[in-house]
Structures are given as C-alpha cells and as structure tokens.
Length: 551
Image: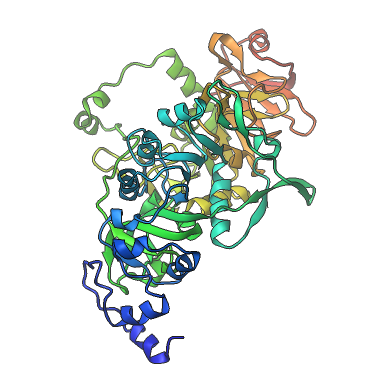
C-alpha cells in the first residue's frame, strides 16, 4: 500500500522535462512506484527481456507507463507465436515503427488482429513479406496483393471478421466481457461456419471456420461472438503524456482505442511526449491505465489514396500533371453518373447516411440544392466533407475508402468501436452500397468470389444487419451481360433479406423482404420493359404506377 504522503508527492507531478528521456522517470515518484510494481518499469532492454512470467506481465499492466528510447527496445520481449492487436485503418494511424522493429527482430508465427494488413511495402505488409505472420484476424484484404496471394495459396491463415464485430470483440475483451450477441452475420458464413481459414497448396480447405451459437431475442436472431485479447497491443497516437494518456488526431484514432484496451501489454508509438498535466483531462482519448510503454517516433504520414477537389482550374493546374488533364467522359462514366444521380434522390433533409465505396460515394455529388445530409464513415467520422483542395490534404483525415477528405461544421470523430455502435444501434438511417449479386428476396453478395477474389467484408455485413434502410446501386449486368439480379445469390452472402431497393442504369426495383419478390417502379427513358426483362435474371412485378427515371 502507498502511504498518503506518497500519493501527495505523486499528485504534485513528476516534473519531467518537455522532451523526456527514458530515464526521466527516475525521479521521486518513480522510486516509490517501482517498489509497488516489483521493478517492472525500468526501461532497459535487459529488464524487458527478463519479463517471462504471467505475474511479471500482470505487474507491468498495473504500472504507470514507461518511456522507451526506441521502438526496438519497446518490442524486445515479444516472442514467436504470440498474439498482437494492431491499430490502424489502411495506413492511417498505423504504428509503423513498432512494426518495422518487429520485422528487424525477426519475430515469427504471429497471430495478428488488425482491420487490414497495410500495403505490400508498408505497415503490417512488411511482416507478411518476411513470412512472420501465421494468422491474420481482419475484416479487409483490400489492395494488398501479397495478403491475398498468401491466403489463396495456403501460406497464411485468415479469419475474415466483419469490421464492426472485430472492433467490438476487441472492445469487449478490454472490458472483461467474454462474449456478446449481435445480429451482424446472421444468415452468412459467420453464423454457419465452414469458411476457409486456411487452404492447402492444392486449393482444398485445410482449416474451416466454426459456426456460431444462435439465440432468438425479442423475435430476432442473434449470434454469439467471443471477445478478443492479445499478449501485446501496438497502437499509434498523436500525443502521450508521461502517465501514458493518449490523444489521437482526426481519423487516425480508428481501431487504436479498442486495441489499446485489449492488450495485456500495450505499446504506444506517438509523435510527441509531453509532461503529465500538459494534456487537459477532457481531451484524453485513452487513459494511461491501458498503456504500459511509450516510444516517440516521427511518422511518415503516408497517404494511400490522395483525392483532391480540382474544381478550381488554378488548383487543378497546380496539382499533379496527370490530375490537370481531365479526359472526356466515356460510356461507363456516364452510366455511373446516371446511377449516382438517381441514388441521390433517396436522400431526405437531415438524414444520417453511410455511403459505400465506388458509385455510392458519387451520389453525394448530386445532393439536391438546399438539402443537408450528414455522411457517416465507418472509420470514425460523422459529418464527412468534400475532398480537400491541393495542398490541404491531411494523412490523418480519410474516409472508409482511404481517400483524403475534410470535415464540415458540426463534424465529430470517434473510434471504430463507437462508429459501429452507431451503425449496429440503427442510428444511421440509410446505407447505400454496391453489389455483385442481389436476389429477388433481398439477399446481398458483394465481397468475395471464392478462390479468386478476396476483398473481405469490411463493414458491409454490419451495415446491412443494422435494420436501417439499405439501397443497392450497381450496373444492371456483369461482363458479358450476365445478370446480377437473380432468383438467389450464387456468391457468399453479405446479408440475408436486407435490401430494400435496387437502382441500376436501367431500372429501379423495390424489394419485398418479408414475402420475397421484386417490383419494377421506375425505368430508364431509353430502355424498354423487354430489355429490363432480358437483363434481369428473375421474374418481377411491374408497378401500375411505373414511371421514368428522372435524373
């Protein structure tokens, strides 16, 4: 027990310098706390490597954070085969220096829990190239070609987890909640199991996912999801004080807070370390009780998808040469614009909306004049603004498509777990997203072609399970005029009976999710009813009030 006078000394503050050294904690309160914490706070490689027992780990968890001289020292005791929780969304908010230190150290057979795996040459992608990861637990493969290749060739195990469920599993783990029920994934591979976690070299399945326990609560099906914890969490923050309190900047917050809480030992890579008391208590995003180690490092501020507002001709000319030359629209662009313009008619004034990647995002360009909607982005932004002008882009401010964006008056920023609480709780009124296939009953498939293309579900499974209105916008057919609207989906489902409306360049259908079946309510001016029937893979009714699509 610490005597009251010792607590008074602690409350007076450590009096550390503005730029603390790893020895700056060797002050009057460090000596006191080191006795309480069994000497676990000394920030040297030798002492860190001696941390072998669970009791020593527990001692570290209950101590004030230690400032380390380097990322290499901070990760020195991470062992082969351990589980790491890693923050970041795309390359935004990624603890790149801690990851690079693990790469150099050669730690292998790791299980890594992270929303995605960076790029081929950045972030967690460097560990993949070093064959240091045994299993990934992620929601999104995205554009990381090595990630997809290793999984499909049987070199890497992959647990694909809906993005919101992944965030909540980590949040629950950090809160001591062993499992929780959610509607996300009901009727999909998540509930049923059998999804390939690992392939054999010949393409057969070596390891399959397990199904979930199902329970009906208030007349609705839910599945039981176990929480996630790990031996270590690696997170990236903007600032930390010497007590371990963390502050994030813009959407670089994303998965970092839930990961920080769920690690037995949390290591924070930060841009700046300030003395205790420099941060106002109200501005702290992660309390220091969750953080055991801090290391200061200069971030690269890499941008995955630089997107700019080039509407101003002067700005366009000052941008990259390729951006200043805008080619004429082709037929595909005109088709996409037509779909996006019709989708914009789904908005109503004051609505909170989530727009998927691709054509759905274009719909925001056609919001009717005088109407205000608020766009929610899964990575933790409510009130998403337009693309930035050249020179105003910020690597810490992106949308769910990893594009650079801006904020608007009234915007708010939060963690990924809070973002999906909004979605899961039904607070987002409208979701507009794309699809590979939609069935006559409103089933949706939009994230994978087994054995060929694996993008991952991302947040789509969470979004369509929320109970909010779901509008699918897509081209009417695939390559070769193959129908995408079918009696039943042939691809793995994103959601079962979740789609309310389908909008294509040819037609608009309403979906009867309860009884099944489509009703054609609008048709393109240059399209005949016979053409719609020809390119639609299932029967449909025709509304007696059928109208022309007006864009």
